[in-house]
Image (cartoon, rainbow, N blue to C red; front, side, top):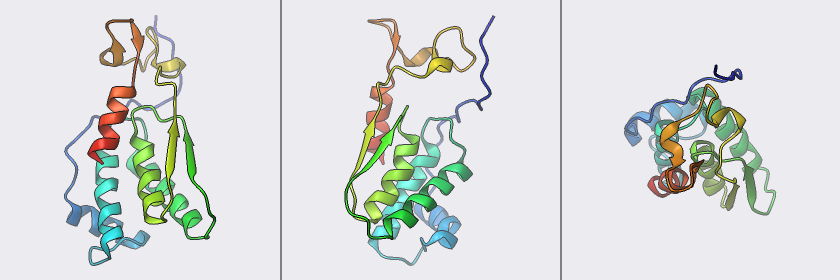
Length: 149
């Protein structure tokens, strides 16, 4: 019997959308297809975020990006911290906003998965288990996600 917790299954990674299609879709949130280099870069990172492995739907990711961007525009100094990164999907959304605001983003995670990601639970992903130690290890996927963004 599998344990259950209300949570959507992870989105299947897809190929990132082109910058033009993402830029156009995001133009109402301050990123335009004719914007500066930061806008183009944000659109690229957001395209990777949409394609990245993880549980966050694109509309929630966009809301996270929009809110973080508004905080970035307030002129508050200092780095940003994400607590709980899983495979890096939300770090891409936050990172796009941080980069656009000229801030650093630090991501903190033990990379062993939440309770519902463990064996016997509904959202367990066996391919995230390190065969050498038999435990969840999302760090390699996180690194690849951040690198690709």
